[in-house]
View 1 (cartoon, helix red, strand yellow):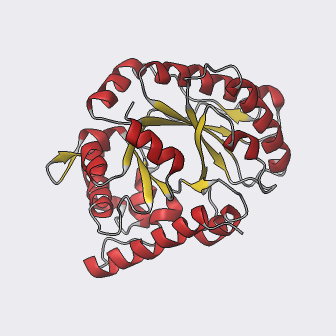
View 2 (view 1 turned 90 degrees about the vertical axis):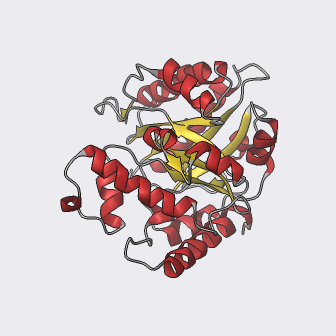
Length: 296
């Protein structure tokens, strides 16, 4: 593990950019960016276009290590290059810590949750991540209802896989997303915090994880997790909130920083001039940084 990167993620001021839209979410990400589905005819062309979008983002002068601590990449992004360097190396040279999304998507809903699909090639993928100087990983589950059995299954699955990732000298980001439209969101989050703490308490002193959680309905719901000795950092997903709403909610949660995806890239467009694109991205980064660092 890179100690300098570990210290930056644990103690640095800023947020983590989520640039890990994959197969299912790529068409929408491209459409939001102004690239219609009739502009590509297969997956290869689609992923080339989304890599061009990501390249434009990460090479922007405003996308730097002053306000962005890390960036989460999709597997194909890790394998591709930016300005002649593998993406992870390019980011690291900019002072941005690279992470890799490792999950293969969600299983069908059962017991009010969606577990992760099996990650059959995890060991090979983690070895490749090490070769590409990736610092950590990210994997997402989905919680839709207040069902204790389902929530326990989500948390247990996440920590089982997290321990495999830790054994490969990587830091896992555990992401049990709570659907922001759930009528029982606050109850889910209170129980989820307890379930996560039980798993954290069973880790060895040298086993570190990060958590990526929906911004809680009750402010500071996750304080105990943020201060847990085995937790490097707790980051928040935007989860469908507008950037304005997500930033406002984030400001009410001490120690919680952003890891936004849609809320980071929604105002960017393929037809913007370089000057306009860079200015929009700079303004967006400034607002998310402010919500992550300057609390109410």
